[in-house]
Length: 323
Ligand code: CP
Ligand code: NVA
Image (tube, rainbow, N blue to C red):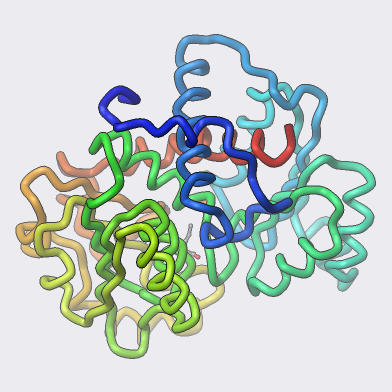
């Protein structure tokens, strides 16, 4: 797949300019492409059974304040494949869940581990961790961002389309959630055109949009927001959606179910996309709500490649920050 991409030598070995991986926005375009290059490299090694213990003897702490299947398992397996070890720390079991501060937790854990991954609610909590930890901090999802998932999404698009630059991505659904925000940041960072369709009142965060539009001026990408899903899906190379009710929003479920009905990804909507479009969903999915079964289980869906790519993309992040 690598040879289908017009490769730039500066993508190889670009060093991360910051200690942490909290948002895609904080990375330069070259850093994003370098992470994707390294992910493809390690994916190949893993498929060929070639050991790649870049993090031999290193330990990653995984703090979860919300549920997870993919993030937990892909980080644990990723650390093992890199020759290191991961420790799962549920907030229910550690003192953080009983009121110990994020700053004390970050300072203490930094004395034991070589990196921390955190899944939490408010984005300011992870920023507090980042400011107080002396080891790299990786965002495993906050209410505002899901950058590890989006790196895996970009990797999946790159593998299936052979390029990223110039492609049209259409995101339909909750424009104000973590996936929408990180997709906006990730797409413009690599020169894609992203069109977000969401109901009025569920549009993306204004600051994130503003910054993405500035980034797009440098990369040739673009971001548009509409309340018309057909307009967003028109000639799209990639269609993406996410749950209508994210973790922590459960009390709004009923009103969200009503508001999002016209924003379902189904056969009728996908007819407006390019004939060879691919469908992405970070999972978990609710068939019959944000997406119909004939789409997510149909021939255009690459959701299980996308889920697998969490492992490969995250190994690149871990190596870049902890090696
Ligand atoms: N996509 C994703 O982050 O899945 P989990 O919630 O299972 O980790
Ligand atoms: N937006 C979803 C993503 C789950 C991986 C949530 O926050 O629940």
